[in-house]
Amino acid sequence: MVFSPLSTLQPKDWHKTIHVRVCRKWEYRGINEDNPLQHIDLVLVDSQGNTMYAEIPAKEADKHGPIIQADRTYVISRFRVCNAKDAFRSVPGPYMLEFTCHTKISAATEEITEPKYIYNLTPFSKLPEFINDKKKFHDILGILTEIKEPQWIPFSNQSKPSLRRDIKLKDEIGEEIKLVLWGSKATQFDIPEDTTSEDKPIIILFTGCLVKLYRGELNVSGYSACHCTLGQSFKIKRAGIPITKQNQPEPIAVPDLLTLREMEEIDPYEFPKTGCRCTVTIIRLAETQSWWYPACNFCRKSCQQDGSSYICLECNTIDKYSYKYKLPFIASDGTEESEMIAFATVAHRIVGKPVEAVMRSYRNRDNIPADIAAIVSSKFTFSVTMAEASYRNPKKSYQVNSIIHSYGKQRALPFHPPNQSQLVTQNANVYAQSSGSVLPSNTPKSSSESPILDTPTKMLPLEQFSLQTPAKTSELPPNASEENTNTLSTTPPATKSSKKRLHMSEKDDEVDEEESPSETATLNRENDDEKTSDLQRKD
Image 1 (cartoon, one colour):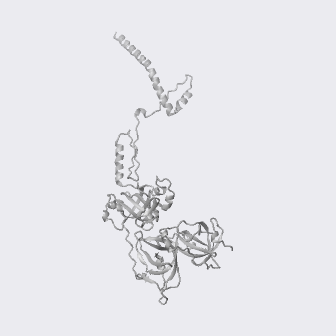
Image 2 (cartoon, rainbow, N blue to C red; image 1 turned 90 degrees about the horizontal axis):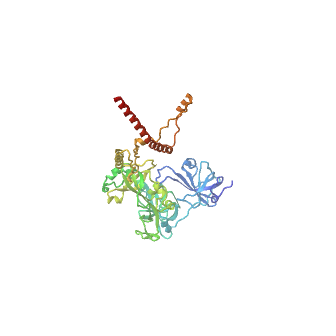
Image 3 (cartoon, helix red, strand yellow; image 1 turned 180 degrees about the vertical axis):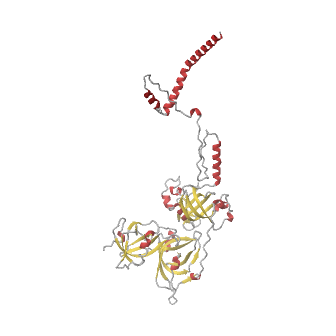
C-alpha cells in the first residue's frame, strides 16, 4: 500500500491514506474539566518526521476516541483535510486533519519509532513577547529545580475550586521561570522520590503551554494540551503539603439572584463583596464610550497614546500592549435599567468574535461596528459586582465578571414599570382629546420597547362622508318593451373613479347655479296666480 506523507496533504484529498504515529492526545472540554467534551486533539507524525494536528469532533468521539491511543501507529484513510485553526496551534502548518463518520482506522503492522518527540522550543528570554498570545502553544525545555504540592484555588467565575501546582525551571544560562499546572495535570505530574540517587538536576520538556500574567507575575501555564517528558528521577526540592493530607475547600457560595430594582436599592458600601447574579437583556449600547482599549501585556492597565506608540505609565514600557474589549451597555430585566461594562474575555464571549477581528472589519469610524451593535436583544445571566463609578454617582453601574448562562436573541425587549405608566398616561390623554386630532406616537429613550399606541380614527364631516354622487335616472324611449325596462332597471350603474366622481359633483353644482334664476321666475308666477284666485273668491 502506498502512503502519502503528511506534507503533501491538501484540501479535497479525499482518497489518500496515511501511516502515522500519535505523539500526543488530549481532550478539550473548555475552561472547566467537568464541561461536556468539545473535541479530541491529536498530534500526528509520519516516518519522514512531518507533523500535523488532527481533531476528532465530539459527535465522532465515541466511535474513534477509544481506538486512537498515544504512542501507537495507525493506518488512517477517508479523512478530511481543511485549513488549520487560527488559534491554539500545536504544530506549524497550513492544514489540519479532521476525522469524520467515514474515517477508517486500523493498527499498523510496522511501527514508527522515530522521531520520538515533537517540539518547537521557545527560549525563556522570548516568553514575555507571547504574554496572552493565543495563536499557538509553546514548548519549553529546562532544568527542574522545585516542585510544589497541588493546592486548591477558588475562582469567582467557577462553582468549584481548581487544583494548581507550581514548578520552577531554569535554562542553561540560569534564567528561571515558573510553570503552573492546572486541574488534572497538577496531579498527573509527579516525580517519584529516589533516596539513593544523586542530588543532581533533571532536564524536562513541557509541550502545549501558554504564557500568562498571573497577579503581575509571568508564568507558563499548562492545561489539557500540556504534556511533559522527563528522564530518570533525581533528588529535587519539594515544597508544600501533600495533596493526600489536604482538605478540599468548600465550593464558593452561589451569589444571590437579584433584580436590577433590588440591586439599585442596595447601598454601594453594603453591596455583597462576592457580587450577585442577575438575568438581563441588553437593550442598547452606552453612548460616548469606546468599546476597545490598548491594554499593557504586564499590568493589564490602559496604555496612553504618544504619537504612533502606546506607553504604559505603570510599567514604563513602549508598544508592549494588546487590544482588549471595554464594552459598556444598558441592560434591563423589566424592573429597572442599569449600565454595565464587560472587559476582555467576558466581552469576547458576549460579542462572539476577537476584538482584533472586529477592528479589522471596522470601516466607518463614525458608526458602531455591526458585530458590536448585534449584541442588543441578547439575554444573559451575569455574575456582577459594583463598578467604581457607583461610589461617586447616584445611579449605580456594574461590572460583569462572568457569564453564567446565555439565552440568545430575544424577540421582545423588556421595559420597567415607570416607563410603562408614562405610556399609559399618554395613551389616555390621546383618547381624551377630540376625535379629529392625532398625536404622534412617542417612544421614550429610557424604554427599550414601547407598546403600540392605537391611533384615534379621524372622523370626516357628514357632508364629506360619501364622495360618490347618486346615479342619474335613465329615461327610456316610449316604444321600449317591458322586458327592456326591467333589464335596464336591474343593471347596476357603472362605478366611476374618485376623480370622475369629484369632477361630476362639481359640474352638477355649476348646473344648479345656472338653473336657479328660471326656477325663481316660475315660483313668482305661481304665487301671482294663487293671489288672483283668492281675490276672485272674495268677490
